[in-house]
Image (cartoon, rainbow, N blue to C red; front, side, top):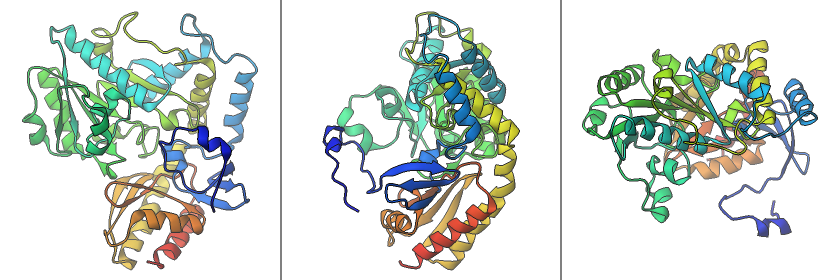
Length: 395
């Protein structure tokens, strides 16, 4: 399907869009302008945890629209207080700053770490991130993203960023110096391939940071908010970060993110005037955040992910047995990846999936990425398997 929309000429061409015009959604399905129905296993890149057209979520948003959209952070509002309490409780951290996106949350986390170091007498605090990482595309977040293709046109970036090997504590230890202010990792790497941090590695990072008074930053933007089977994926390692970043499913389609910090960091970093956001934490998006937490509890979303994860994993493992070019499954909960042999191009598989009414996205070098809505049911996994099997048979 070829599209020729005049308005496209007014959009900055930073995205390679698929030739699909999506008009509406219901549950785990999306519909295009030709009324074709797609099973969505990408959920807007991990955003739409509650699927589409969720009645209670929509009602909460509509009710807030009629009350108050925006006030600025010069005033208090009830929704931001409740949303901060919900997020602090879920993360087991203490203080919340609301942003508008994931990359803004990373920027805020970086500033917080730099200020914490500055208050200890360290100027120009440095960061350790990881190979195959992705943290965003603004200049600070891009500096932490280990992708030369993304970085090259925008250099010089923030200096003093070093990249260690993921799940290799010795590679981290070798990079630590007296100016290291923070170590940042995705609890499950997304864009660079679906790679979960193993428990021992996460615990070793926590121990290292405690010994050196370095802040541990957990990027939970894609893997958090229930996708791993816990509210935040670092919980699997039974550790707490000093700073956590969130977005995507936090608002289930509303433009909201956050960084959350523990009390030690809160008492020794940002003060009035150090950071700000015009729209961050406005009454509308915080009504959405509160609705998300309420629905997660009422509909037992975490329980659903944990209940169905073994079946999803089994379904993908069966495809590996059936097709030689399906090499490996990686992931945690409803964040799964399927590595393909380079002889089969993932872009072509995704395109063929679309023809078969299944929406998937890619990651890593040549991997299929599965990020379904968290309301997924067993029959939807069966439908995905059927459509994907049909697709793979054509390669």
